[in-house]
View 1: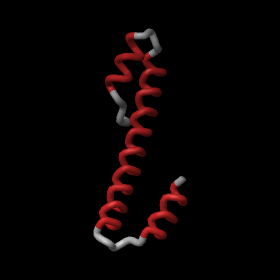
View 2: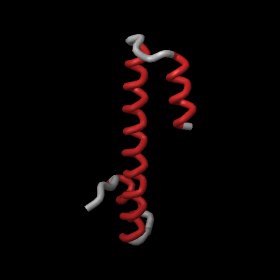
View 3: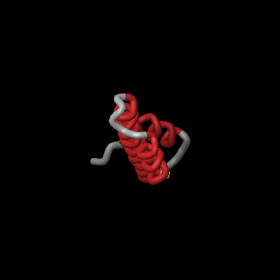
View 4: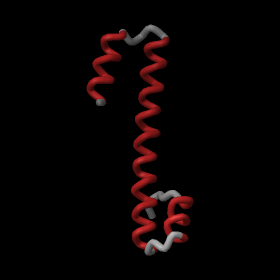
Amino acid sequence: MPLMLSEVYDALREAGTSEEKARSAATAIADYHNRLVAIETKIDKLDALFTQGRLEMRTLFGIVIALA
């Protein structure tokens, strides 16, 4: 069973959304949340490399442009 945000699911059900649609929406939101967490983790790693002087600013800039 895919991960879903129970708070979103419960709120949608309480608002009258069908079980299927509420489950689908809560799962989709959880998927986006997981993607954002993964991106945030990568940015934190890049920041650590830059802070340690192991990554030059132009390289960091190129990576940020590529992600945009």
